[in-house]
Length: 303
View 1 (cartoon, rainbow, N blue to C red):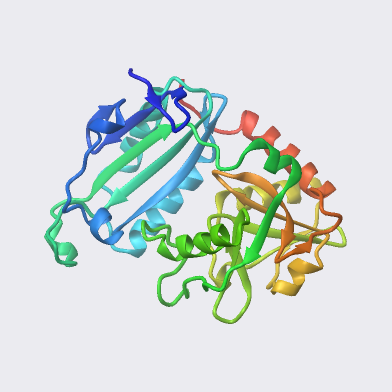
View 2: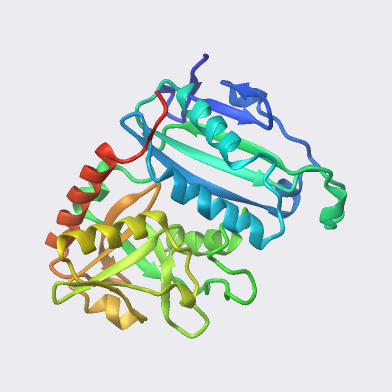
């Protein structure tokens, strides 16, 4: 298996499943220009992590994938058990103990029109390799954020609980953060309630209690978010869904983001307001440790 090279010139293991073919070279991983996933964002995906030779929360991710596909009337081109084996084999071929996996199901090649009936068969693509969304110093020192002017998609238009290939709404929020010179953007819905970051769920701590926005305000129901709820239940940490506004973030004792790629990462500034004492808080630190303990033993082995 040949190595891939990242932007810094460092070699890294890479494995790709391209709709029936395993590859180890991204230059050979080519799709049709008529692919509806490319032309229209017509498809669904999952970002999945592997730790210590195990795929973490594999069932949860695949459940969400199938639910997303059902919501857009997209047929996944493999049965559940077959897809499990393809996923495990793709990750196994990286040779990595820890990996990030992007699993994509698209409508498949069609024509230049939007009619999905012109796509003869859906397609499966999997990329497995390494990822680091933020440098290690951000986990120690925290992120600076802004609240974006771009509003999160309305659930009755394109429901954020469907993990589709259309991420332009999120990208517009990310562009605002980049132009503002901060690390991340926090998005509100059309009623002014906090939803999530541009790619991660958000939690706030007040008086030792943990709060996160409910799904109906317009968020993706994250797998890492679900794990945090489970850890809190086991450890007696009070954690609940609650509608939040900007002011709640300004006065919070702690704020942090969570997601498969970022894991748990602290926020120390929102719109120029320092969160708490400006350092990652004690509840965040405890949850991060507990989360890492969970990832050390939980998962489906692929070795």
